[in-house]
Amino acid sequence: IPHDEDTQRGDSVRCLTTLGHFGFECLPHQLVNQSIQQGFSFNILCVGETGIGKSTLIDTLFNTNLKDKKSSHFYSNVGLKIQTYELQESNVQLKLTVVKTVGYGDQINKEASYQPIVEYVDAQFEAYLQEELKIKRSFIDYHDSRIHVCLYFISPTGHSLKSIDLLTMKNIDNKVNIIPLIAKADTISKNDLQKFKCKIVSELVSNGIQIYQFPTDDETTAQVNSSMNGQLPFAVVGSMDEVKVGKRMVRGRQYPWGVLQVENENHCDFVKLRDMLLCINMEDLKEQTHTQHYERYRCCKLEKMGFTDVGPDNKPLSFQEIYEDKRQKFYDQCQREEEELKQKFMQRVKDKETTFKESEKELQEKFEHLKRVQQEETMKFEEKRRQLEEEIMDFYKLKAVSGTLQTLVCTNIKKE
Ligand code: GDP
Image (cartoon, rainbow, N blue to C red):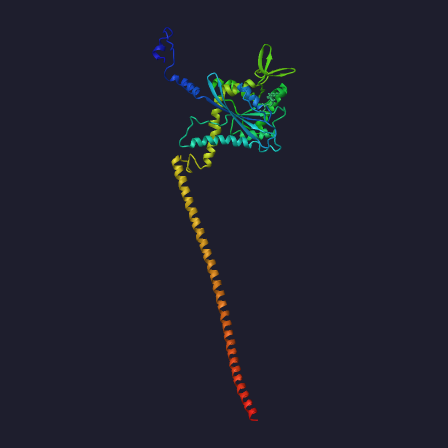
């Protein structure tokens, strides 16, 4: 650290240069060492039609044959294939997760094609949020699966974006950093390619689709990043084939009329993509994912759950206050529901009582009626019995009279 006194003595003073680092100037080295020890992770989402060159481009980017089987065109829905690889370059370890669409663009109705992608991206945010909300969090061994970049593969039609492209990008642009790519750019002429790029950019702008912008706030990368922002979408070519060019072997695609060198900047934008994605902006992509996209998801989710930073009077609210408020509201709601249930129960009891009373009255009336009918019947029977008894009495009387008459007649006959 230079002293004022030392600097005032001028050039005649011999300055000592330090041999090593000491003090807090060593802080960056500590961070570098720590990061190297921990290793890095990076999650890429590749969205594009089947056979558009997603797997080949990822292999070319990481210079590794990640051994992926060819996808079929006959899926009834769009799906996602998730693969994680442990890669190493010198002493840097990278845990790379590649998520690729399967069956994208293969259905007749393409309206819902973006849904599985949105659901997957949200699910990774949700998993991270759940980890954050845990009491015992374990971020040290947590595999952060949030998508850091979406490489969107555009078909090299030379015309314009397809409606599936616009729909998908529109639905994911506030969830993930999109880098649009013109796939298989070797199938389109240089002139057409430039026009196609302009057309894509104007379509993205007119549809209000936000694509990732390489950051220009760091002066060491501002120039290259701003120049690259003007060259999006990158026109890429992928190939793992080694082709002979002069005396060198290069990655490229061999055609009857010549060789397309993947790593030649005059042939395609592959190197630009690799530099921007892996060498210069990987950390920014991760930071944007955390500070922009995840933050938006988290904020929305917590608001939906009823959390807020300020109260209705615009005064800051602590977590404790929100919790107490929610607990009180919940308690009040329980009370209200209990009261409602009680009321309903009482009403039902009353209704039942009235119905019972009505039935009882009806029964009583029926009983009274039957009783009356029975009494009348009994009276009728009594009357009939009395009449019968009278008839019997008359009969016996007649019988007695006829007996006496018979005896008299017999006596008279005998006398005669
Ligand atoms: P994916 O289904 O999107 O993963 O596509 P693949 O990476 O499996 O590629 C499908 C076919 O396209 C393969 O035969 C590749 O060799 C070929 N291919 C991949 N990239 C390119 C490219 O940039 N240009 C050309 N012409 N063909 C390519």
